[in-house]
Length: 146
Image 1 (tube, rainbow, N blue to C red):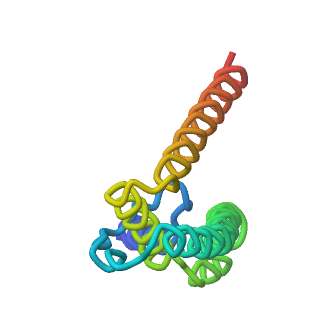
Image 2: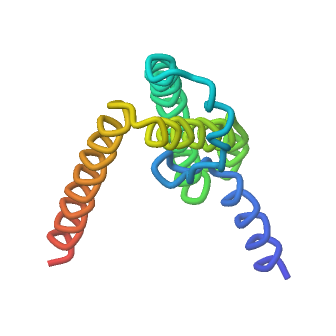
């Protein structure tokens, strides 16, 4: 009985952990709200949202790292540390911002703005960087096991 109660408590704390920013999917935002924007206005709005995404991503990453540390300490050494998992999760805000960024990109594509190509290039560069980091992480973890 004690094991099952402990398991339930641990699982409830695990669900409270903040999600890593790269694992948060964009929330759908209709591109229709940007229909009346000019290409210049779309570019300005994209820059504003990009800055906000960077800010919120940093906060979310810090929260996720802090939660992971608290979980490790709590499970191994000191269970009251698990109470520090309740924090300032920015998952919903980050998902919304990512959705707005995607909506701006769709509007830029529809209006044939040069911004659309810039955003596509940036997205491709980010994807390539993420793939390289994933390969490096995998190689490091395989190196530790060999």
